[in-house]
Length: 125
Image 1 (cartoon, helix red, strand yellow):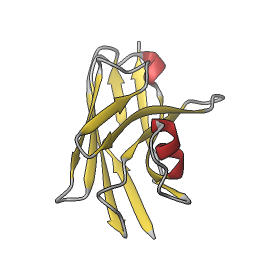
Image 2 (tube, rainbow, N blue to C red):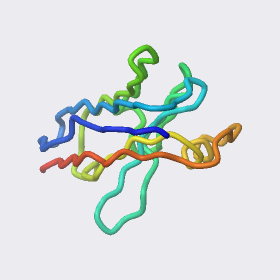
Image 3 (cartoon, rainbow, N blue to C red):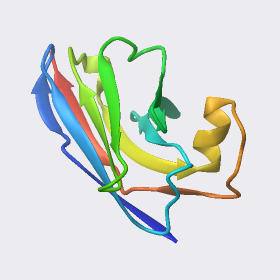
């Protein structure tokens, strides 16, 4: 059982920055990737970023603007969000498990996934 808690969301002006954090507790494996999806109202859940050991992955819409990092000792993952745009407005969810592994296209080790409660990011024009 894994619990994930996101923090750091808020309201920011276009062009600004936010830093999201995700703290994991319970059974989690360092060999498994951790990452972020987001969901805007009326839209599906979109892949944002992930970190598998030291290898980062990014969705096309955030490449060059967002940076993911992972602290294995503290069992946390962070998302530095720069040059934010109104289109980035969404609820951001931290995740580990099968959906993320399939998103990355590599070996799928998990049989289920875990999600945080989400943190709201709102970017104003």
